Image (cartoon, one colour):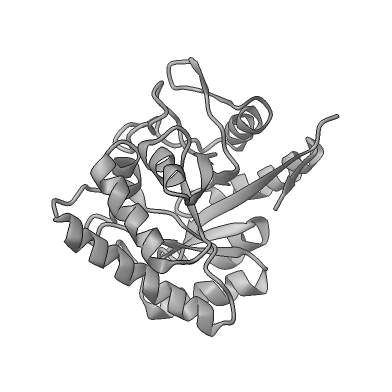
Length: 246
C-alpha cells in the first residue's frame, strides 16, 4: 500500500481564539500580521503556541482592510501594496526571530490570495515581497495559478495549497463565500476532498467535474465554524489511510 505525506495548515491569529485547540493537529500555520486583523499581542501569543507544538510558522499578509477582513479587493498602487505587505511580514518575522525561530512561508490572505492566483501584477508584488526578504522561505499558492507559475520561474519555492473546507469551481477557483455552498462543514466531505487530492491529484468541482489539482499542503480555515472537528477527523482518518501529517 502506498504511503503519503501532507502538510496541514490553518489561518490563525484572526481573533477567533481557538488556536490552542487547533495547533495540536497542524504541521504549519499562517499567522495574521495586521492587514486584515492581528496586532503584536495576537502575533506573540500565536507564535508561542506554534513554538510549543512545533508547528511551522508562516506570515498571512492581506490587503490593509480590517473593515472587510481582507475579503474585498482594494484599489491601490503596486508600490503602496508592496510596502504594506512587506511591513506586515517584517512585523511577524521580527517576533518569530525573537522566539528563536525562523519564518517558514508566506501565504496571502483572502481577496489578495484569490486575485494573485489570476492577476500577474498582483502576483508580482507578492513575489517581490518574498524576494525582498532574501530568505529561503516558501510561498503557499494554488496549483496552476498565475502566482505559482511566476514564483517558480523566479526561483521561489512553492507549496501548492488546496482547501479541505472549501468547494471549487471547474477552473479551480474557490466558490464565492457569498454562495451557500462555498464552505464544506461536513467532516466526511472534507476527508473525501483531501483523499482525492492526495491520492489521485484531483478535486470534484461544485458541478461534479473532476479537475486535476496537486497539493503538498492542505488548509482548514481557522474561522470555519467546525474547524476543530474537521481537523481532528482528518488527523485520525489520514493516518488510517497511510497519510502522515508533517
